[in-house]
Length: 406
Image 1 (cartoon, helix red, strand yellow):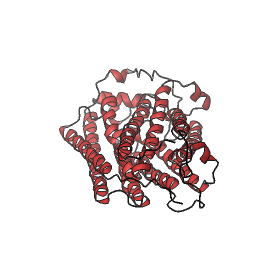
Image 2: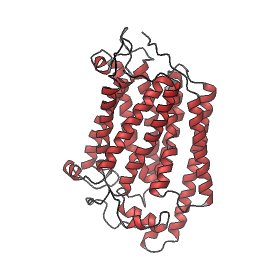
Image 3: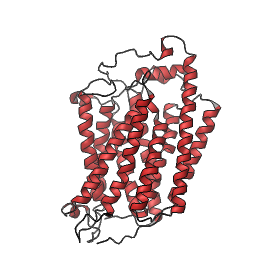
Image 4: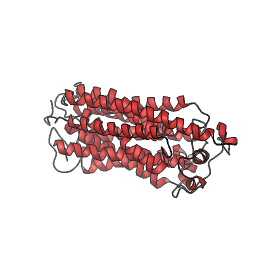
């Protein structure tokens, strides 16, 4: 079994996880903006997300000869470790609910702001819990100033969203016609969505300059989740719920692998990170399947009804959804591997993923294009503070004693 034991290896895992976990939301957002039903996208995403956990467990979890304290993956499956298994599965439940909620929040609040708010809640709650669960192996004098930097970036992110919303309102106020008051839908929301050329993303909106009022209107017409005329409280509620879920899954995984509450019988080794990730991903997969198949027939937020047959036939954009699942699965695995070595509080530095998401938001979706100077200054300040936050949280990394407690 391969274990990350050095601080350098742990930080490498965190950086890779940061990139992967900041990229997969952009892929889901891209498909929603091109008109693919989020239920279809999330089902595809869930499949490869689970397969990535299987691949990690059977490869990294089975390399070499295990020991009593660090058994290989297959050996540990037969051991009496159900209390820890339930904590791991609880973490998977929280992550699945959080990811599903954030998928819908992206449409209402935007990719960058959704990630900023959920990351801030995760850092404030989850990182604090992990610090105490890890017996304070991280340097508090460095860790908590890093949390403070994150909170400053959150306020800056909120200011970016407010400024950009004002910019968009000004653009649309000068746009005459039926679109001015948000009445831009050319079809009823209850109709079945017809397939589009999602791989190429071809539509009239793709030929319109990003950031213009026409672009905003065209985007609303083709996207799957219609947001014009709906309360922003919907998106904020989804975002805060997602943040609360994200803040709990890492502490649950921490308890599953380190048994701080001594729930295992004497002599039973702690779950390895690979075994815990396997059970974690099973729970995540099952919840995602149940909820999204239900949403096919009973959709939320006035989305069109679909069916499992329609989902199977909808291959448009499937490759991107499958890739998103792989990125999220490997990103979570790397985060947990780094956390096991250096402490889960430091591994929560990957919650600075808005750095990556904002980059993709600007490049792929034209977010903040043609915005005001004030918006650009706030955006630059937010990104700078996130960079500082990542550096400070990673500098707080300790190194866990690899000797398992009996």
